Image (tube, rainbow, N blue to C red; front, side, top):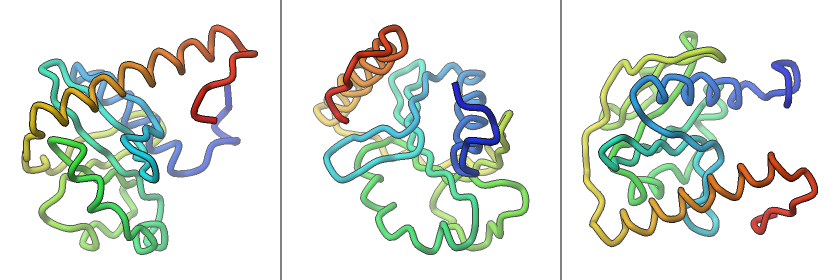
Length: 150
């Protein structure tokens, strides 16, 4: 298990976000791939089947270099940015959610607008989420296990 010193700033934000999502009744997975070529920082699956994507940005440069975030909108019901309290939040689009986080917790500052997924897309994402979570758990239980996604 990595300690705080071996984690990147975005990974520390993701940890705090995941901890907060659990308090909201969500399950969360870091570095989830909804389809080839897309990797979201955090995917949350809520108690009513809602799907949230949270992208963690540790700096202005990190945010400015992200040109693919709009492609994640088609994979969730709500889209959020997670940043620390020093981040210049005026850079973030108003039509997205905002979470202020640190390595230990987070708080939803602005709720993202809801744009519900179609039932067929939701089924695909939830099944992929469950499979990903189960394989990741298997990897923790069996250190010699080679995960199929690399």
